[in-house]
Length: 348
Image (cartoon, rainbow, N blue to C red; front, side, top):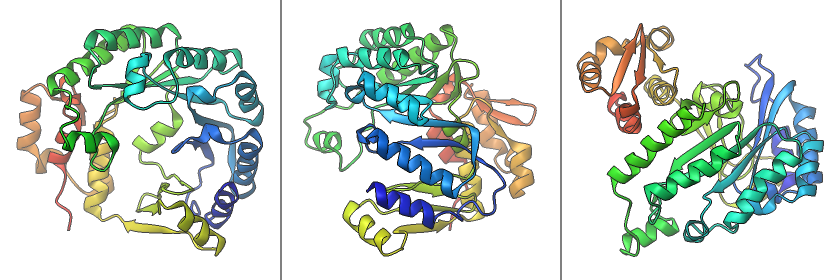
């Protein structure tokens, strides 16, 4: 698989041909990249530098499971060039961790953050999940306090989603699991926003919080609609005008890569798609949606075309208009996806 990823990097070396930007973020995510050996990671990083121009100050992030964070491995990550860790803590409760089928326990979750600090990482992100069946608001508050105590530079927090086809989705369809009430989910999200703001974190995107100056470049690139290349099974790529989706099947991926073919589907984005993506991504950020930029890029005046709905959102305290920028209020962030979809243009 590592060899195939390196081959895909070579095959994709012209993906950024129309971009003058140097690569300033490399992100090992998806599956479980912390299963890779230090030698494999170093080999992939060398291949990236062989075929792309990488900025000297590039942010290199690795998503790590707490149970993979041995002291020797963490120190080795630092030596091969990883300078940011995103640790999938998810919860500091043994009971909750068992429920969401995580391999680690609460003690390991705590230890993994300490190991990262001991290895010299000064840019650490912690992932947490809320709105989990059995997670009370009181216990969620305890999890937040535990995370804040480590003073991580970044915290990502996500509501548990019960997607069809997943274990939880199947349990839900068979009435083996009861979905968390929306009011409880909202209560936990509001607590998240309030407590992290109090602790000095900036809420720069719906699910992402950071200490000043510690925004994730990777996340920011996505929300700022900057082009990115994803390699490996299930990877997504974006070059402003199209999206590319690699197949999920590992065996088929390996076979096609070995034949010099990139196994992917390409979706050319219509103007309507591009406008919708602009709205979806920008409204999720603290900077908001700059309607002047939207008008310049796509000749779409949302303040005119959607004036009645925008006025309704503002009157209901869900949105603010600051100059020419639309921003969601704290109340509006609870309905971010619905508001964005309601503003979408119908695509053909």
